[in-house]
Length: 284
Image (cartoon, rainbow, N blue to C red; front, side, top):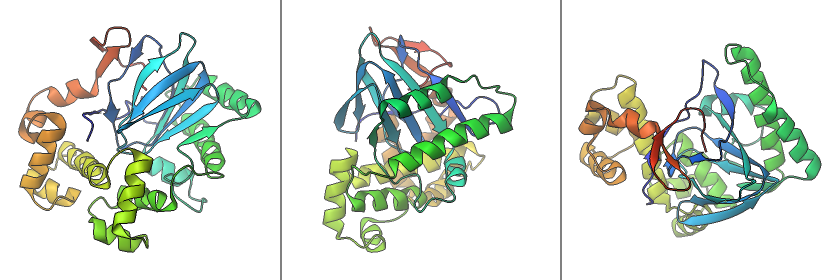
């Protein structure tokens, strides 16, 4: 599994979603989070890394990163222009309550026509009054809903992958055989298509979702690590401990007992040098 930092969206204020205009001089290291994310490529060209794969994009591309999918901006042209839209999982579900599928359906990359690109860019350029929660959520929700319905018209993943994503996001405790039976597929076939489409093995992705849930439980006051590990879907605390150590290079006790957790969330890097910096006004 690619080494990646756990970096939740720094949602400003009380709104459950936000739109950022990327600052070209900075980028986040490879990271993942519980929030689903959209990237609108408004101008220029770039290369993203996701799992074991790379993705070349250009103006007019709309990207979707599911919860737990690591991603990183690797290279970008001088005229690269990016908008990032992030929402909480609960808000995404509420906004799409009338949809036939959850936000895990549809294309990972959608090519927008010039008119749609212009419309989306205009929406993203609108200034949001952070204190007006209802206005921000209405604005972001309308964009998220329209983007989803456009994405839902096409798919660039195997149907088994789409169903596996949806099921694992809801239930990361599922074992491979249980998941295969639930989505009506052969276990080996499910794993093969998932690895090809997501760039991560099914086991690696499931582990990442469990780690996210474990961190959320621990941060929410669930200080009994054994119970948090079990509730997150791990078979035992030792299994959770090994996965945590492998993913973050430290034990849960060190992660939560020091400033490491907050340092990891706020870590940024300059594109030209890779040097780490502190920043809170941009996200990729």
